[in-house]
Image (tube, rainbow, N blue to C red):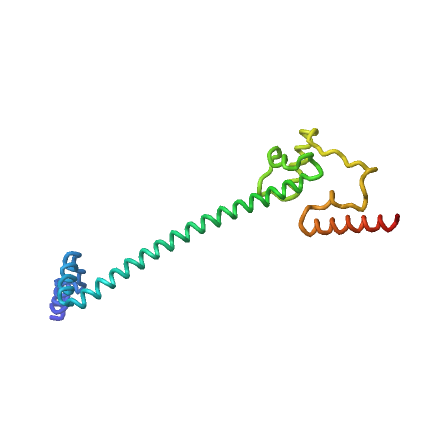
Amino acid sequence: MDNETQNDDVQTTATEPATTEEPPQSEERHDDAQQSDDQLGEGGLKALRAERAARKAAEQAAKAAQQTFEQRLQALEAENAKMKAAQFDRRVTDAASGKLKTPTLALKLADVSEDMTDEQLVAAIDKLLKDCPELAAEPASQGGEDPFRFSNHVKSTPQNAHDMNALAFANMVSSAINR
């Protein structure tokens, strides 16, 4: 008899309907929404319309803000790329200064890339000079150059320009005093 009650329990569990409910179809939801809208009355409908309009306005504002953000991001990325290119150009021309007549030619003629180290840039410029010796800078004349002037040996920056002007002024004052 215990066997029979056990079988009855198994059969009842197999035939019981599922307890999970299926969500109503979208049409049913829409009908329910219309019925609840009708039950709200005039004031409730007005508030509901205002809420929906505010939500749409907020969505449009968020979309506009996203577009503005993306445009600013693209502009900043473009500016960053320009700055990196200018920095690379400066690295190459600094490495080529004193070696080439026109250091900017190193950008066009030497096999250089942005991921190269300064030593690799110098090696590429040296290879260019080996292949095209006519591009080499002429050696500075020893007799006519003032050994105290360092304008040809220092990279040009605003502070260095100030220092060079101060040195030139000091040289003029000392030569005027020595007369």
